[in-house]
Length: 421
Image 1 (cartoon, helix red, strand yellow):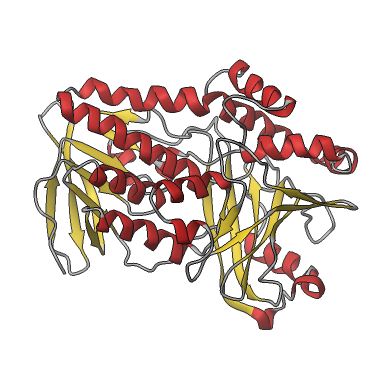
Image 2 (cartoon, rainbow, N blue to C red):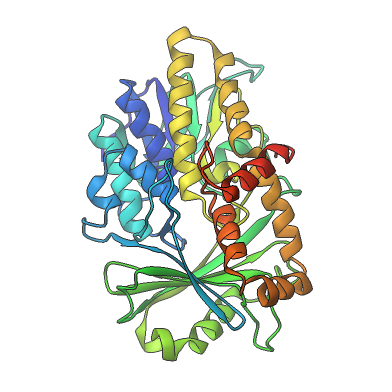
């Protein structure tokens, strides 16, 4: 096991999509980057494994052409979303836009995360696996600025890496954020997701599927969503998520609910216990900037450590990677002029880009917490295709900066008018 060097330009904690993308971009800009992860690749993560066109955009930006186009082993592409609700089943292709690719993809997190981490490594970042970051170090007794981190390896050995900038991409647990006293905001939505893998002959489906009529064993409609995402290796990722605005959020057994729901679809999707691969796993889904500020005392929060998941659809990979790209740009500027204040640009710019959208998502999550509202939306809104095309673009966060149609104008206007999260 190699030991991290004791000094670097930037130390990145967490080699998931956000941290690895940050490290890749920083290394590409010529910086000395140390990237640490407590696990070893390949490693599993609780996720739907669905990659929207926003994620595909980031893959292409990193030069991962074969992965983005589904030509690499473990990767597949899809045409769009098949949405199920009530008596309606509707296929909605990913929109044709100037700013975003017109297709999505799927890959297990074991495959996806390692691809991004190895890209960072190829670009020059020093990747160290199996190291747990235990805290931060301070430049002065007043704790005015962080100047590195401390770590412990699997054998109990300890050490530190000193760096003028720390990227905290350590997931929902937020070890680094908590070291700074940054706690989860209770006024932002959360969700819990559960997923399992099943062998199925439908794994070559060209559509990812979303289900808006998720129900419990008594048939009561829940304020959540279900999904079936086809993968390249003969498997389906089958899962569900419940919003914290739901009255059932803390009362339901997510594993039993997924077992029941998957069993009810077995005839169509082959989701039988015999076809299940591995155990059902659950995990938190932090949404809408649920830890702020995004920069504090030399530490930038990226991805789930800042709760960057989209409240509309539970997708967080694209936001983690986009934030990582911006973090690299801002850190590059700050290191060039040796001014800490430049790092505040990261917080301001992300709030400008996504703040209004996340506020809309918060309102959406609150509305979906009421079963009556959800039932009306499913029964009366879903059959109307023009409305669903608008909702699809809104929930997927896919519009052109220079709108080409009325739907883009409506969504962009709503984002501008909504107060920033």
